[in-house]
Structures are given as structure tokens and as C-alpha cells.
Image (cartoon, rainbow, N blue to C red; front, side, top):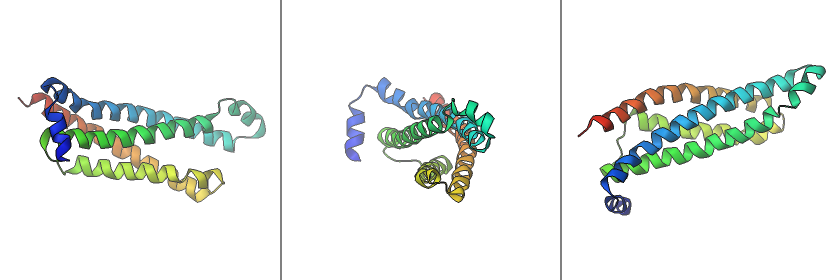
Length: 162
């Protein structure tokens, strides 16, 4: 990890400062994508549970396929964003600030990995896996909203610190 600090020390100060904002920007993108993936998931469920005539129309939207695609993107960007946030914090400060934002963020990264890992079981028709997937993701969205507030408080500290 010391190498990371040395590497960042070689960067121009304005670039090192600007890197502080990569994580928040990525996380706002992830929140938007996660909400869109949720909408697609709801439409996929509606497709699965619709009567035959309505299902014909809904299938055209390929909601399940798009939900899987956007969920995969959310997983990848969230992991990337979580790791980059910790890396930049460590590089700029020589330590991580262990507090609620970091701990909840690590928990959220674990939740999304577990929710994604349930995909093969759901594709096989396992209803319990589907319900756990939905529950984990509803918890994730709730925590995400709290993280957005606490994250903006951190951004505000960075912006106001001389």
C-alpha cells in the first residue's frame, strides 16, 4: 500500500485532488443504474406472472434479459467504485477512515455480490432465491440512499477543507 501513496504523491496536486470525486460520481451512476435495474426487475416479474395475452406484449420488452444485463453492470461498477474509493482515500491520506460510510459500503458490496450469486438459482425457478434476491436488493437500495447522504457530507468536507 505504501507504493500507492508514493504513486499518488507523484501526481500533480490538482489531479490527486480531483481523484477524490471519482468514487462519488461512480456511486451516483450506480444508484441510477440500480434504480433502473429495479424497474426492469419489476417488469420482468410482471411478464412472468401475466396472463397469456398480456405476456405476449410484455415479452417484447425483454425485461428479464435487460434486468440481468443492468444488474451485472451495477455489480461491476459498484465493486470498482468501492475499491477506487478506498484506494484514493488511502493514497491521499495514508489511511482509511473507518466509520459508518466505509463499513456500510463494504456491507453493500457484499450484499450485491450475494444477490447476483443467486441468479443461477433464480434462472432454475427457485422461488426462495428470488425472494432473497429481492430482499437483499431492497436493503441495498435503502442503504444506498443513506450512503448518498453520508457521502455528500464527506464530499462537502473535502470541498471546504483548505
